[in-house]
Image (cartoon, rainbow, N blue to C red; front, side, top):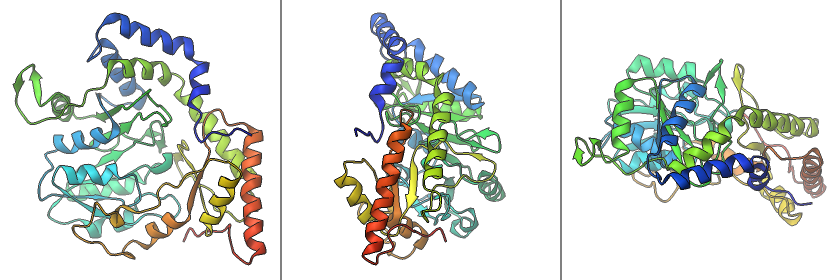
Length: 381
């Protein structure tokens, strides 16, 4: 059975005429940088997220850096975030000269634990970056309450959560900034790298727009230091076509997630949770397995794709050894890194494929149990 971790080709074929027309329109226009499609897509995203301003950039990673630069964060500052995420979250903090200060995660959502944030705040704290991991919204009311109490801006890392909802509000537009990734495998993916920052603050939006073009409002007049991080016209045109299908694709992912949950019922496996008042968009469908590596090997033997997001927490990565954060500092994160396993999740996943995947996971569990090893049950405590 041919199963893909993410099936981008089939998705493209279903909307091929529209996408191809958009591509050829841009190619025929000759406006490959900052063409009209960029502004049109920015307006469409702002409307979709119910925010006032959206500024396209070259990637979600750049979006985080642009947001921090717009807020004036730099050398000697600290930014509170999670150690359980893709490296870009902390990498961008370090690249602007600030220091990532980590806070352990909630064991059920894998997101930053708001109850532990306040203890990490110091006089040098200049922002909090919660990550809506796997498409699951963070507890934004609790986070914003702490941030407002201390006068600290919040930058939402919504790289994996475009369209996820927290108490009826789409994430990304709750904090001072939201940073979004349109990497091809994301729920709304480009045909290359692309990203965006969103905000409701006109001054921050203006500053972000300057930063992405070398700190200028007028060509060759540079008021502040910036970067080269424009959203390509071609990617904007493709993304605008795909945006109108996003809610439909979210629902397909949610149906697939619910099917997985049903098939894993009474297995003892910890399946993804959906926090109260939230709409999880299942960028990833992630299990917890105490014998994760044994199950992963069994799936590999059966040629079933799978992935580990993420095997090494950021505080234990070689790139972040100054200051040294010893192993054991964030036990919930470190346990999650040993136990999480993500299964195929995309809009084209069939029920037959899901049944085969789940049967294979159960088979791996039974095999390990026969050897006296508790393969299936992880811990959410």
